[in-house]
Image (cartoon, rainbow over all chains, first blue to last red; front, side, top):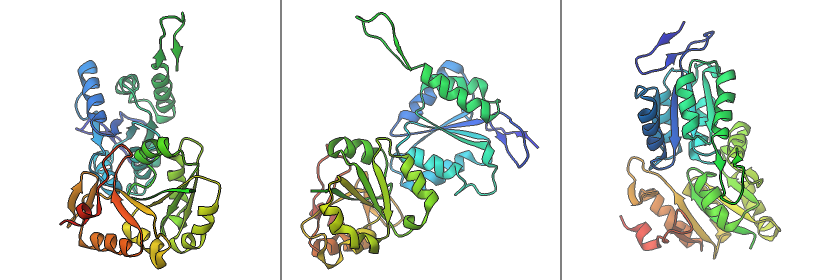
Length: 158
Length: 160
């Protein structure tokens, strides 16, 4: 059974198909808040579709607990700022089931190296099943990274 | 010197360690000393994922680590040694095996009964007793989250 939650995600139980996912952005300092604010200003989505979480002042257990609380029973993609870090560690621990026992493993995904293009793609495609959504997010995030040098004709792309 | 840093940090391997300290010290090996992690293969794998520069990550309980300490000191590799609590570092230091070594307190976060020393460092009376015990074992304890930060001396650590 699938229920569209008031908070902008789909509650997930065993055997369920895809539904709109909630995004949680976890980052160092104020990065997550800034990125989520930018997405809301550009895309105009409800505030609970994408939720920011900072690791500031939180130990590993406190960060995991706060992340698990935000994720609840929703289908969630957790975006982290970098692959090496306490944010990614917390995301992997919580999504791996240490704090989320009883939830459906397929209803959790972690994407590291978040950027604005990736989040914008997420909010418009969050109903896709994760086996299509997650590769798409990685591809869009990577493709949005480009470099330009005045003395070189072509751009350097991700 | 083959053990470049002895650090107490609840987060163990994370951004400040891999990027902040790693870019300065260039370790090729992270040694994590923790009785619980030493027996948890899946958690070890999570920490290995956090290292992106090809450095080796290995896990030992305190007893095994004490037995290997001299071997690590004499090894050619550049080691960063991490515990996630003061108790593990103190047990490692017993019998003055860390005499003369600097022990860095890099991340002990707020919890019930702990008071703030710095934004990354909160200590309670038990923690302070362990800091004193580490000093008695000959280690030099200070606080510092990143190489660019000011070092927090013993007096500040022990002030309640």
